Structure formats: structure tokens, C-alpha cells
Length: 142
Image 1 (spheres, rainbow, N blue to C red):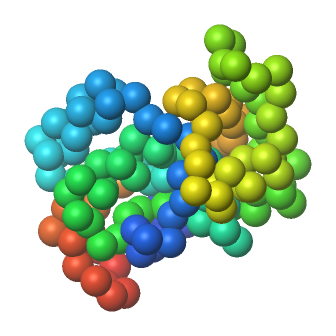
Image 2 (image 1 turned 90 degrees about the horizontal axis):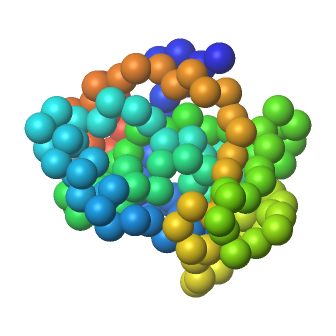
Image 3 (image 1 turned 30 degrees about the vertical axis):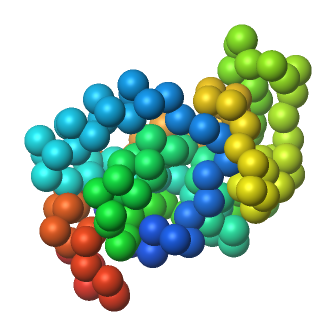
């Protein structure tokens, strides 16, 4: 279980996607993010590589809005056995390993949308970090 103290602001360029997004979902979330004037949910990322495990659409929004930083909760992806990965029904794969997720995130390629299905603690702390803060460079915390 995480709380607000586990949320860090990291440089956007450190994060690495491993799968494509659905533009329609991104656009809906972009509208909500602009309406809220901030992020209300952090991404979940591997603490060693910056691989995005949950939050590809929020990452895409940060790129569109040209944010410098983004809120994340960092996890020990390979070392934490409570974090598992499988594939979504309808994906073109039968299985997927954590190593394959990391390899893809470090490559120049991406899996199709909704390939990986991570099981991670489902409680993320509610946050509100304004877009103004996320546009700043440096270590300023909310």
C-alpha cells in the first residue's frame, strides 16, 4: 500500500514506454487533465530503468503538454514477486515476461496497445499536482 510520500516527480525523459497507446483514450484523458489542471494519479515505473508499468496514456499526455516532470511511484519490478505480468485477452501473444517488458522499454520498438497486463497493488494515493508545477524543471516538490 502506498501513500503520498511514495510519489516522486521525475524527469519526463527518464521514463520509457513499452507499449503503444489508444489515441481516443489519450484524448479523453487529456481533456480531463486540462480540466483538472493537474495529475490526480501517479504512474508506476521500474525504479532501475524508468520502464512504465502503468500510465502510458498519462505519459503521452505529459509529452503533449510538454511537461518537464511527472509524478510516479517507483517499484522494484524484477525483485518484487507481488508484481506480475500477463497478457490481455485478445492480445497477439500467449505470454509475456517481466524481462520482455524491460527489453521492449529499452528498445526503439513498442508492443501494441493493451499487450501487458500488470498486477500491482491497486491502491495508488490520490494526488493533485498542478500542471504548473510539472512544467518546472528541477527538484521543486509540491
